[in-house]
Each structure stands twice: as C-alpha cells, then as structure tokens.
Image (cartoon, rainbow, N blue to C red; front, side, top):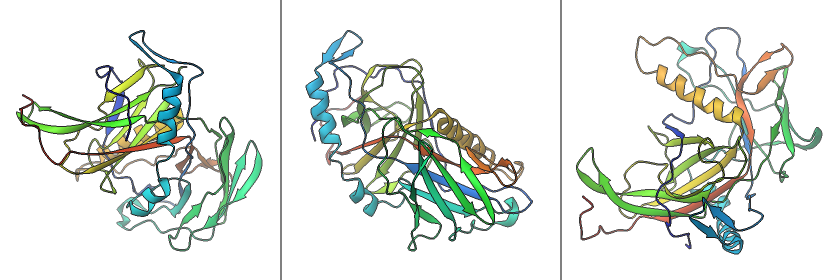
Length: 328
C-alpha cells in the first residue's frame, strides 16, 4: 500500500496510552439496575487541507498527494474488517443493565428498548435491534460532517437522552510503517509500527486509536491510545509510534484512527483510572463512570457514552524475515 515516506523523525506527541478491557462491567454498587450505553457513530469522512500541507517549514506535501493518499485510505474494507474481527464497536449502540459490583455476573442485555437517533434535533432513524447480538442496535444513517447527533432511549420503563455530539472529519491514516529497532530494556531488536498522518489545525482535537493483530482486537496493557492536540496542533506526524509493543514476523496490523470529542476522551481517561483500581482484593469498589447519558425520568446521570466522529483505517504486514544487520 502506498504511503508517505518517513521524511521526519517522530514528532513529539503528548498522548495517553493505556490498557484496559474494552468490555468493562459498568456497574453501580447497590441500588436498582440502571441502563448502560455504549455507542459510536462513524463513517470514512476525512479532513483534507485547503492547500498544500506545510510540515513545520521543513517540507511541503502537495495537496494532490494528500488527496491521493486519502482516496487509498478511503478504500479500506471496513465491512470486511468487521466480519473478521472479534470486537467491532462502530455504528451500533449496545445496551445492558447494570449489576451490583459483588454480584459477579455478566450484565444482561436490554433487548426491548426503543432507540432513536437525532440529527440537529430532528429524528432521522429508529435503530433496529440486531437479534443475532442481543442488546445491540444498528445505526444505518449516514452522518453529516459538523452536524449534531444525540440519542433518545426508552428502556427498562424509563427515558434516557445523550448529550449532543458534533460529528467531525478525521485526518486520514496515510500509511503504516514497520521499523526494525532496539528494545533497550531487553537488549534486543524487534519490529515496531509507526503511523503516517497529520493533525487538523485548530486547538481542541481529540483522537483514539484501536489496534487489531490478525483480526484480534488488542485490549491488553498499552493497547488503547488516546491523544489531544496539545503540542502537535496542525503538525505532520510520520513514523509515529503510538502502539509501542513488539510485533511478530508476518503479522497483519490494522489500525483505526478516530476523531473524538473532549467528553469521550475524558470518559476513556476515567475508564483507565477505574481499571487501575481493580486489581487487588484491597481495592475499593469502583465508582460508576457516568459519561454523557442522562436518565431523564429520575433526573440523574446514567452509565456509558454515545460518541460520534469520523474514522480512518489502514494496515501493514510485518516482514517475515529480520534484517541481516543488528539494530543495536
């Protein structure tokens, strides 16, 4: 797959990379069960600069090259990726009922809800329940860049509403690279992955990356990465190592880059904090992570998050041989 050559060395990126299980029991200690919501609305909507891309005065990338690279990224078979992946959260809303912290049960799915999607305050779709995946409701509406989206949900005898999310375009993943380099902690060499992309000018952008190896979602330590644009606003980012883990020979690495809101960014930071609390018998029961869902019947926050934003994906295959020369 074509990609921009690594012209620049890795630019500084202030990102938070952390590990947690994606399927987290968002439960409330004690009390009656509450609705838990997890949803993400997205499409391949890319931000393309108005002109040539000026990479900090060091190099300029012509706009036509950016458009060609974005067109290649736009051909990524997202539907095929879903078919072969063990976890794929996009364009669906998952509803479960919370359980008590010490109940040690899987939160049951909510299968009889009414889930409505609104665009700029107008109803555009009533989501259909996916009978093959209990508790999952499918989003088929095509989002519009810069439009506002929210959900209204009737479930468990109560009404819920999400905050408005502005759907924003994402800079495309222009390419992925594999780099054979040193692991100084183990005094050895290994392949690592870098991404080629650029940051959208204007403060306040937030990103999330998801990683798949041979179709398997990576949910271990340091496998989920988040970033805001502090210190990198408008910069070109080539060969950027956001994954950090060693790669095995011949593996296929797929990366999804998502444009997110500040609220969704903060929500995931809170998830990291909570996950870090649960690892010892002496840890206190975790507090619920409320997100942007409101139980309008009882006028209180509910659990989970509904997010909306553009997505881009790319992949690379790790070479099946190691270089003859050592990296050390």
